[in-house]
Length: 237
Image (cartoon, rainbow, N blue to C red; front, side, top):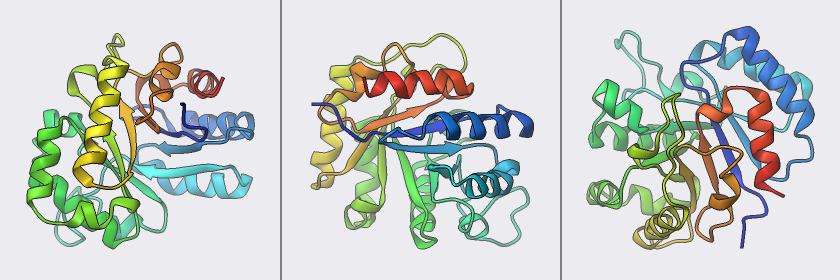
């Protein structure tokens, strides 16, 4: 049975100018008014304030998220953006994306600290899980994830499936569903788990129709508003 109200996260990565960001918000905001799920737009840091103002001014049903937060909650950390600085702008933050690990050397310790800080600042973590053993490492660090299971969106995001702006190479939907179910099993609660990795308008239904998958973290297919709109349309057909 498909989820009647999927959570769809648009991870824009290092794409879009401010002009393109405004166009995305206006286009999606106006044309997705009947979408029953949750749309979370995650632009680059410089555009968060303007995006919030535009979304609020137009009363669009788009939620705003950051693509990352610092492992520090403020202080002398040049170039870092703390959760405490953006907590009035965003409701969500992507944490632990495999690209952060690959290109910026992010560790399990960094990720766990970021989840902690996000929760302290009333920001919902969109926590990326590359494999079930990685989740096991997080669980060894304490009860944080289990105690806050209802305040976290879990993402099964196998690095091999990330398109990186190139060709789409998604995981097998049934394998993704199995791993999503393992996340629920490990946490011990019926958590919200979405899938990340090469989702597009052609394959979205095959993922969102899986019992354990409640939406998706969308990269390449979310950058252009038209392709994103086609994706969410196909997700609910």
